Length: 302
Image (cartoon, rainbow, N blue to C red; front, side, top):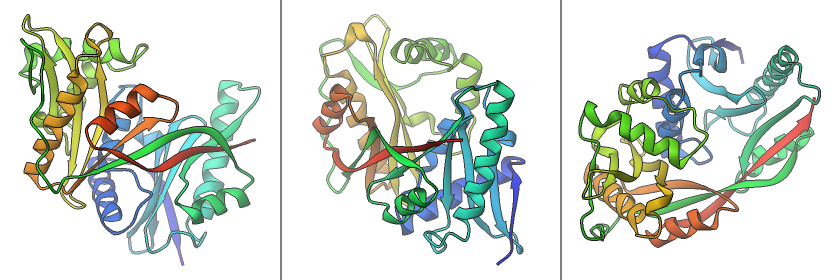
């Protein structure tokens, strides 16, 4: 089988990757939601997909998969469901990714170069393959959580004076960015990045939700992503200002997001939480999410 690879080129490539992930999630598991891809590309203006994403194609142009360097030494690899676990595509992917990572780290003068990726516990084929490459599982992990949307979610319960709605208009963009940056300090999200995100594929303004205090302060937020191919939703990111925590505002924006996702046709929703973040896990469990898997880091020295 002939396999060619090239760096990401343009918006047409992005549309192909979004469709690829949607179809993969419909037919299998262990793939990013399309919302993960869009968030990775647009959350910071310094990310250059033309240097960080590589497409792997057949001689007829069929997309076999892609790799993405989230950071210089962190690479994710996604292979078409019918080719997964065979090593035919994964082998060239990780061979190239290893060489590319080593070159990137040499440019930075990293004295202890290493390469990292992630794999779900339930993805036995990928875990076995990573073991063959000499990559060992790290304790650091994320909880992969899911919630069915068969029944309508309950209406958000809000403290007096608060409302939940989507971001109003451009006059509110800067406040929305400030909210994110306070929650995730230090954050690389800027006003320019947020404007770019709002113009990105599959971003929907009606799924960019905020809890607003009576005085107009944006207190909590979430972005929900809807994929019509797999009919799944995702929440990324979610956060509440420290001064407003403990009032159920994070719960309220998620419930509203779940309601809107269901109205769009979503049958389930997912979210990830850092494994040792108990507050985050409890929040997601309080709105009906359950842990269905763990995603661990795997790495080795170069």
